[in-house]
Length: 218
Image (cartoon, rainbow, N blue to C red; front, side, top):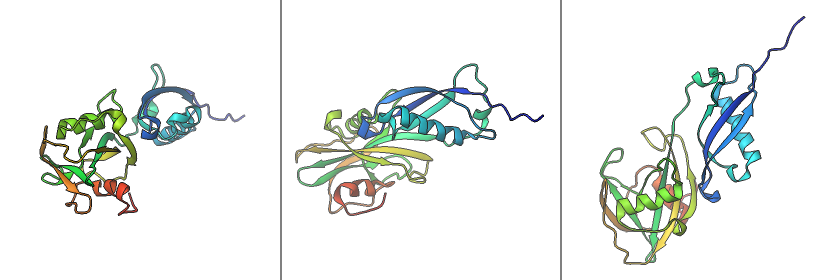
């Protein structure tokens, strides 16, 4: 008599970051999954991702920061390597004279190129809070998290030569004459006319284009 293979139900703890439209909140989700025979870690990720979206609508478009088996669960599925994704936040700061604030990067990659202010989201920090913090650290311009309007998430593979980076971009408006002073690793901070921008690092031209309509692709 033949027997169908037995599959164990695994308990997972998932850490995720809600989309900017849902407030960028970091949260955790605990659930169970019975993987089919031969399931890869990517299969598990996709199944968990679908289940999270159905059970928690605010996290339907969330970025999964990490997931792991709960203690005392089989760990065979975790042996398969997966792509490491780093999470960043960028700010399109525009003044009432239709200028955008850019920094000159003092570090690789794109050292010496102009870019949007931004940087890594710290553990326990929302992307919106990170955007406000990085703007202040790199340019000396202070805005509140409530001043930042979500523009979207840019996640194309290859957008950063260092590896897989996903960025949440935000827009903020300030009066003309707002002073900016370069800080941390930035060589300079300068206001540029939106109609006359320099060559930009990464895909920052496309991020800016999302508010000017000069590009259609991300």
